[in-house]
Amino acid sequence: MAPLGTESRRTGLRWHLRQETRSRHDAADALGSDHDLGTLAGYRGFLRAHARALPALEAACDAAGLAARLPDWPRRRRAAALAADLAALGVAAPDSPPLAFAGVEEALGAAYVLEGSRLGNAMLLRQAAALPEARGATAYLAHDPGTGGWPAFLPLLEQALPGSHLWPEAAHGARLAFDHFLAALRRERTAEPMLHA
Image (cartoon, rainbow, N blue to C red):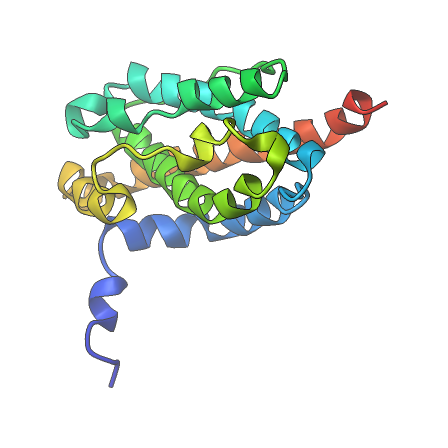
């Protein structure tokens, strides 16, 4: 017999999105670990990689009408914090190639990826904050929407898309968001040698 509560963790939209994006999540973790946040060069590379993906993802969520389903979405946006950190470190913001979602269901899937990255960023903050050169340039990692973060986001996600017949669209949006991040991480990997040449 499964432990009490196990089944509830394996049902719902969150679990569906996790299953549908597991391989992409693992690939993003592997590529993201290229950046050593214990060094200034690594931290700059990390911020640049995220700046290649996040602004376009947030803009696509805006265009798809995400705020109509997630009322606190505007407070969750982090592109301005990311731009401020790059500017504080004297790093030019790279291009963030545009993308579009077919509807708000796909944008909800992308929001799952974006909020998951925020959760990961919170763990990286300690490393970056230990860099003297990064003082005053950790707004992106430290960004707090003041809405309860990940624990508050999950019920909002479930409420926004209660019908499981629309979960495939959300999963497609989540995969698109991961693919956008993966492409950004790969572009930054090839750009880094030129940046330091």
